[in-house]
Image (cartoon, rainbow, N blue to C red):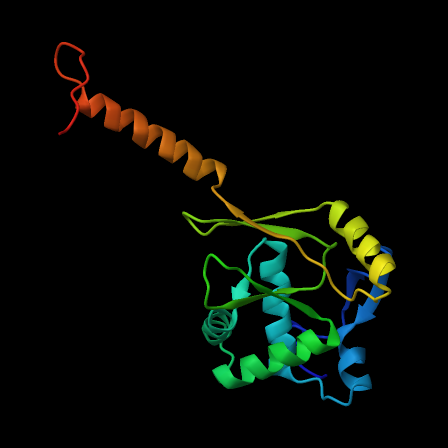
Length: 190
């Protein structure tokens, strides 16, 4: 892919972990070519945005990726973003997540990091990532018991994040103080 030196390129190799948790180097451009797809500027820039946001711990939906691409000067339709994300997922370049707290959107992240799982706060929507070997061992147990090949396993947990817990505690204290009278007695509402 020819381009300006400052343009993102799919020629750069990405580090991913295979199912045995060993490092495997895969070039995005090679994967696209081997699958019979062209390496285009749009594909390179979309993947570069996903990799950049993934390094910052963000998860983008297709609409957010589309907006960021436009803000970066890339002329691309939302339909093309969806098709490109589907292609990237098929080739193993991105992971797709459906966070239930949102309920309507799928989120994508570049497959450049070790296997991890997600916690979503039901109050603020913050998504926290964590790693655990328990999911891997459970997957192996299921595979052995059922005689199946596990291609992907993930754990998604919902609850209240530490920040929201602190806010809840603070709000509760303030509410109790507001109900106290001048003499310190607590007045109950009827």
